[in-house]
Length: 173
Image (tube, rainbow, N blue to C red; front, side, top):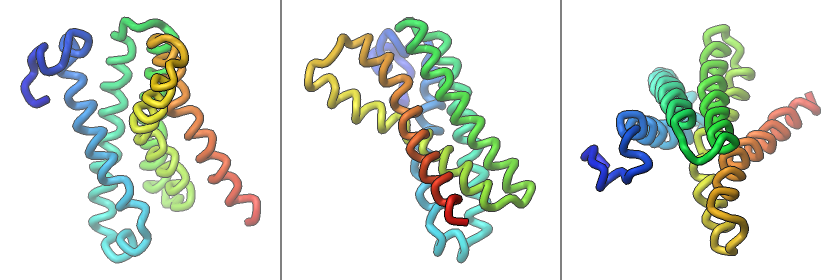
């Protein structure tokens, strides 16, 4: 993966290798950092570390989201697939920026809500791979149909479920 050759990246990704590589690396960084940001004992005991990792997380998700948007608009699968992945990049970057703005304005509860949304979107690639493999193992739909479905379903459905929980917590307040 570290060697930018067509043999490593394949003919589909190689022309965009300088966008793919940072997208993957920054996405992995965000995926690893994310869970530690949600653990209250760690967050409260090591607030300075929480803030530093939070900055790395925000930068990683915004830049990875932007590189994902570029890859979406240069995709040659089809328009619905490209738009689905482009909007994932928009939602991912925007939710992280909103989390940052919220904490800068000392809106801690709002910050937490936006971080939940952001991390749900960070995990979209996991959802994509997991559900895609299940669908394909049952030989449902063509490769292109499943790609289009997953370009939207990998993030829109988990984000909707997260939103139900986020808003549901507020019903009892």
